[in-house]
Image (cartoon, rainbow, N blue to C red; front, side, top):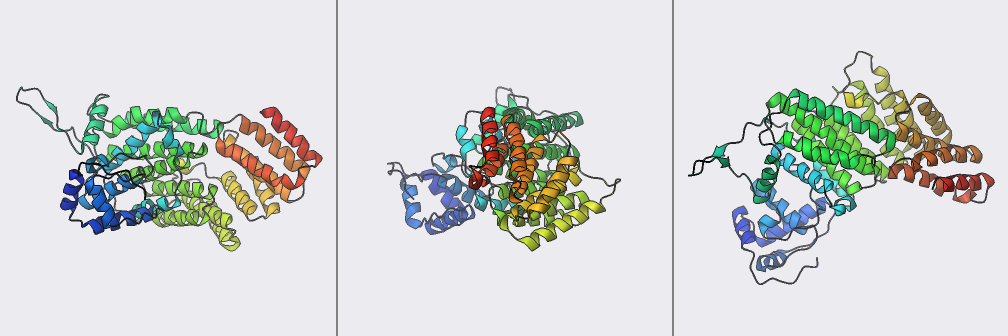
Length: 487
């Protein structure tokens, strides 16, 4: 790794922390290398590298954040690059941590909200890393429920002049962060009405996302999280209210990730999903944690990481357990099927689809279904079948299921209907029905032009790539003329 020229001042902060942690130089280098491997980085530091850091050299890129995470895990308190006397780095690693405590989870996720709502454009350019899926999903699966999430009024100290002031807590950057939050309302008592408001806002943003795409109101959602949700999380609440608050925060954070995913900010979306998973654990809601993992699985499918998608779906199934409602079980099995479909694994994909279908058929009208799973119905399952059969190049079956989904799916799910229409167009193309395929795709292209969704545009482009062998045919020329008019 290339490093900056040595500074004249020895890094005494790093030396003190190495002594406190009981690391040798070689031991620290080895742990940084191991953590890097967890995130797909081949760093190859050694004891000489650590000696250079102690003399004042500054490691580049993500390394300062990785070193800080090594000390955080060892010492049991959150440390940053600045705490180690190292320069801050671009937030490539930050946000993939699975926090040790609910309080730490709030610190991490609120940092994401704040950076995302500001002018930090680089945050939306962070690359997705499949290696970054391993640790959070493992920690969620084997992690124990948080014993306590309740927050009481923060203690105060009284200075000599008799005027009370807040007692600082944690490293300087966390204390400063909390001071900033305090200016928006210290010790806010969270009520059931506050949580109901969070859920109502979530429904509003979900509706906008379904109809107009993730780019339509994403920034408004992030600002809402920063200015309304964070003060609640840093407020005061009992155990039951706190669990419900973390559940609502998890849903909104997952939605922020989903909308980021829809505009192709994949690295940022991945970080939101990891933090939503941690908030769901604080809520004590294993079923919703499984749903977040399914969301991560869907992103992996979209990006072509089929093996990771299957693994995430299976971890979700294992973590949710057999007590999850049939609708949730169907959702989890359908996600696994999509991963197998991307990999071209016909038998495994078919078996997962059969499990999903049977689970949904076993659902009864009186079953208690989480509100976030109620949209998974026959129309949604038919859509999953259509996608899987398309990926397996079983075009007749893909067309049948896509047509059924379009017949059943409500108009409000405009983006999902667009995706399904492109799947149907692709199936028609695979069956040699060029004219009908181009008509369907032209409709989808017109809808995509009205949305703020990179995924919608990419679905259309994927179809157009499949059109290349027929580029001189009359239906294709007509299609291109129609699409050009939308521009």
